[in-house]
Each structure stands twice: as structure tokens, then as C-alpha cells.
Image 1 (cartoon, rainbow, N blue to C red):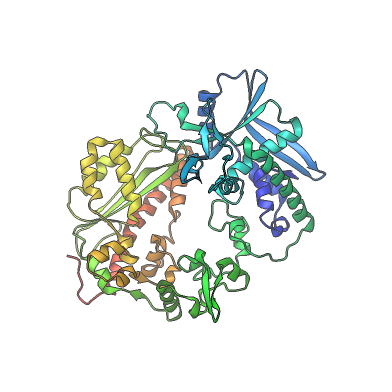
Image 2 (cartoon, helix red, strand yellow):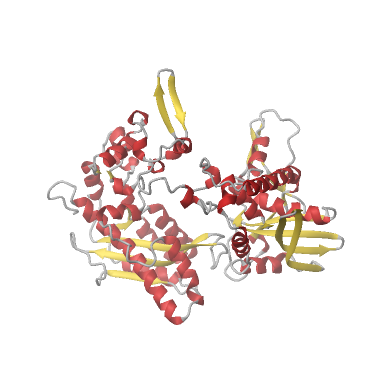
Length: 563
């Protein structure tokens, strides 16, 4: 059985994983994940900028070690380079250095960086302070060596490669470096520069990590030999539900939990619940309760619900009631000005900045949809007052997008409605930086942004200014059990139009940007179909906002209108 770092990390989640998994299929899947096609550009640029001085460069070098009669440890070294008698191993990760560089430890009321650049420009872990008085240095080390968080997972994967290399060749005259993207790097639009990358040396952590990895391998072997299919307790940091490292058997192991209105759908369910007893309150972790069989909202005793919002959720579910705070909703809707402009952006998180001014993992806008409602209660989804833009993936169309956006929206001096304002506002501010000549025109749009999420959920500061008490200003404005604890656009629209998005090929933003990324490699027929799918999806987003407002009006005072 071939075992990579990803395979090992999966097998040690729990003993049940081994009995559910097909190791041959798992290896093929894992091997495909490290296929360099997706990361080709990031590798090529690093090679050009950093490796041209080496005498010998081996790319994608295979290393393996027979740890056990049935277990072959297996990895590929992104780059193995020889310079004089020293070997350098570089491992590139599709992540940024931001969280590593933000790490600080406290000592004598001062904060110190965990990583500092050495004379070669490599970030090296600082040694433990001589005086440990009031220091949390060891806590930070524990975080770096904990595979259950994102930073620890990077360190773990790097250490796994080093572990295999050590078993086969030893670590004399070899340096292992981890390469991450620099979050603050700004692309000049012409050529990439060395500071696109940050290089880290985690060697000071290796001795501890090697012991952890060896223990984990034996743990994995034990799980395989047990081949135990019986149910195991669910553990949040192992199952990683709704996480980027979610276990592939989550749907199976969580199948007894309701898809709607489960215990996990209580607002802030991660904080757990408190049971009142004669001797005081007893805390219950949410996953602890799930493992006890309490899986639905209704499985939690009412007396455990101290939060007014939890009580609202519970009442709406049991009574099939829709909570509407008429006065607050009417107050905020009255601030809207006709014609109502509904705006939605689609963007993709680019690992490498594509265009001038962008940084690693920039949310690069490639599409917008605009609906303009000129009459009370009237808007056609496919009418003449709908506008759309879809960029060509092979070109920088941002300026064209911005110009058309300004031309359409700034014909009017009225409300620009978005859902979750932070996203569109940040993209518009980025456009101001990319194209300063349009800064004032873009600011006119920013100043008129209206967050529809504030209507259905809340904006406490706004309502306090409007004279509502702290209690009333804190309450949510609208809730239906159809939402299952979510205020996402896709959930809220289901209250008013159950069929919204159901007939679309693309149903969420992730599917949208993945479709856009594929456009340039599709054949003409498939490309035309994908373009149509993208336009229809974004169009539904802006039309959904109109539908939500129209749906809300039905619950408000008779004759209520938006002036």
C-alpha cells in the first residue's frame, strides 16, 4: 500500500476510515491531487526566479521507503537541487505565508515574531527564549506541530517528506525548504519577482515531528489491521465537516443527522449548550451531544436555550412560524431610493495574481449582473433592464468591466442593492486601486451600496441610530425554519421561491469560478454552453434579491411601499 502525507492524514482521523476506504483508489486520487498541471505556472516561475544558479535540478523526484511489509511511504519532491556538496529540497504549497508571519509569542509584556529572516532571506523559527517568564512560546510551537490546523498541516506534510528522505539517505548535507506565496506581493503586470515567494525552514521542528509521524504510521497500521466498521464518535477536528480538509466519508458518517434544522444549524452551535442543574450550569459540547444521539434542533431541551435567537429558531420550527420584525424591516427598506439597482459580482480566488495590481489569492472579478427596477413591484428577470458582463479568461477585461459598470449604474443616483455588502464593497475598492482614474465614479457606487442581508438578518448600529432599544436592535429581523440557521442568499430565497436555482447547471459561486477557469480549454460548443450557464447563474443572484424584497413586503403593514 502506497502512503503519502495526505493518505496518512486521512487514515489517522479515526479507526473507521480504514474499513471504509479503498487504498488503491485512494492512492490514485491522492496522486492526482499532487499532479503539477494545476500548479504548473507557480512552479515554473519559482524555477526561473530561484533555481537558475544550481548545478543540477531534479524535478518531481520520487522518494519511497518500505516502512512495513505492506506499507510503502511515498512522496514526490517538487525540486531536488544540488549546489556544490549540499542538496536543497524545495516544496511548494498552494498557501500564503501570512499566518506564519503573524505568529507572535509574548515575553515580558512584549511581542516577538516566531519567524525571522536569516542572512539568506529564509524565514527561520526563532529559538526558545532563554527566560520563559510569562512566555507563550511553547503554545505556539504546539500549534505549529498540530496537524489539526492549517499551519500544522503544512508543517506535517513537509516533515513527512523529510522523514522519508531521512530513512533513505539521511539528512547530512541537505536542507529542506517550504515555499509559500507572499500575501502582500503586488504584481506589476509584466513580470513576477522573487518576493512573490517566501521560503521557510522548519528544521527546528523536525525532531518532534519525526516522532509524531512515526507514531501516526503505526496508528494507521493498527487501524488497517483492525478493519473495524463499527460506528465511532464524531470529532469536529477530525471529520472537518464543511472544511477544505473534510473527510470524504462525512456524508456517510453524518447520515443520521437531519439535512435541515439539525443541532448544527443552531446559530453559533460551535459554542455548545449549557444545561441548568441544581449545582450550576453544565456545559455540553455540540459534538458530544451528537454522539449521545441528540441530532436535531428539537433534541435540545428548551431550558438549555438561553439565547433569544435560539428560542426564535426553535419556535419557528415547532410552530411552523415565520418571524418578521415589521417595524425594523420597514424602517430600513424606507431608506431605499428608486430606481433600485441590484448588483452581483462573480470572482475567483487566483492563487497567482493574473493582472497588474493583484496579489496572491485576489478575488479577481470576472462577471457581473445588474437588474434595474424602475417601477414598484415590477421587474422582469430577462427584461430590457437587465445588464451583464462576462470577461474573456484569456485577457484582462477589468477596465472594460469597470467602465461598463460605471456607465450603467451612475446614470442614476439611487440605491445599489447587494447581498453581503463586504464582498462587493471590497472588490470596488480594489478597482479604485487598479484604476485610480475611476476612483470618484466608483466611490459614488460604494457610497450607495445597500446590504439586503441587513434587512433579513440585522445591522445593530443602524437600528440603534434609528432609535431602537439595544434589545430590539440586537434581534434578527426575519427567520423561517426553511433557512436552517443560514442567512446565505441561497437559503433565504428558498423561503420565497423554492424553485430558484433548481433548474440551473451552476448553483453556487464555487461552481461558477471553476466553470470560468475551464472556458479557455473547452471546445466551442461546450464553451458556449458554459457561458450561458454562467450568465444564467449570475442573473438569478440579482433577481433573487428583487424576489426577497417582494416577498418581505407581503409580511409588512398594509399598503407599505418603498418611496
